Length: 294
Image 1: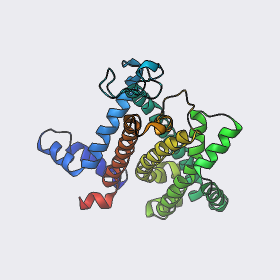
Image 2 (image 1 turned 180 degrees about the vertical axis):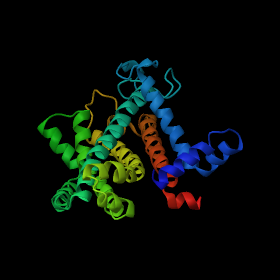
Image 3 (image 1 turned 30 degrees about the vertical axis):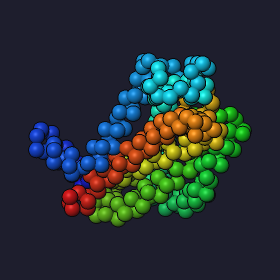
């Protein structure tokens, strides 16, 4: 067990009680708690969206651009669609893209990073390939993929994942290069342990804490990029409610109906803020140096 994971276990046991310990934990890790609570609310809304009242696709031309409170809690857009329902359903797209990109980037980057850091002959070719991939902007890649295929959530996930993988590979490789020089790894090598066993048993656990933190930042970045792509018309199809599509379709009515842009924009900002706060809080908890200082 690594020092970071041991600290997490002790901290979790210390906060299992109630009263002063819990209040002390919340005060000490305010950003972690705030980010987790906000993100949990949006995840719950996204999961419950199909069962909540209001249809994001139903158009009511007679009620177009109705202000909040006039029969609709957050008003309607230019086609008479419920802004609240569309905002809630838009959370499903943004969170799905963010989680899928984070999971795919971490899984692929972890495997390639372990190979690059453990096998010297594979290090240079893999890292040069990663350098080439980092030169590809996600937005331009998505536009190219959409022009070859069609706009879809799958295309967006692939386009955002490709530039994110090299960052994970570099992180894992740096951790592996540091850990493989530790005495316990050298002892395992001297004892005749095979490379796969050394990687899985001694090196892999050390990569988990920084990977968890990196995954939160990738998730936040992916949500922003997906909204940007949808705004440019290279993301989710127009028939799928997403925050980027909502902002793009309502930009002409900003002066007349600001709520049509304010609501999805505020939801986007809150989700990205929550994921970043969660990442900062996890970094504070999982970094042994910060843990001792706190």
